[in-house]
Image (cartoon, rainbow, N blue to C red; front, side):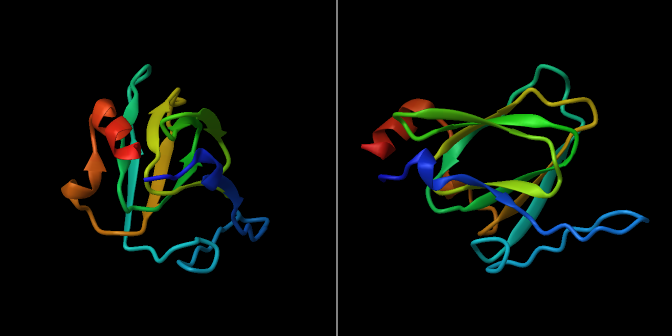
Length: 136
């Protein structure tokens, strides 16, 4: 599959200011470039741990630092790019066919994921060598 990290980008999400606290409303197909079928979040990631380490065949994702910060390293089989997420009104859009590693989590970081499909183990590519074969 010929996808590129250049198809992945940081999206500024709406931010409604209020003296009592801000809110960011999200709608699939409007602010998010896909319909949202699943939402999950990672938290309490121990210092020094790496998450991710896989790619998806069909899944689109938007990753948001709901709290704290972390880095996402994207890899399309040829090019790597690392993106730091640290503001809750910015999300990283990841297209299918991109390997991702999540690392450098700050204390108290919460990683929120909006996904285009329900969980499907068959959509995962979990071995990097298999990913490279998939990309040919």
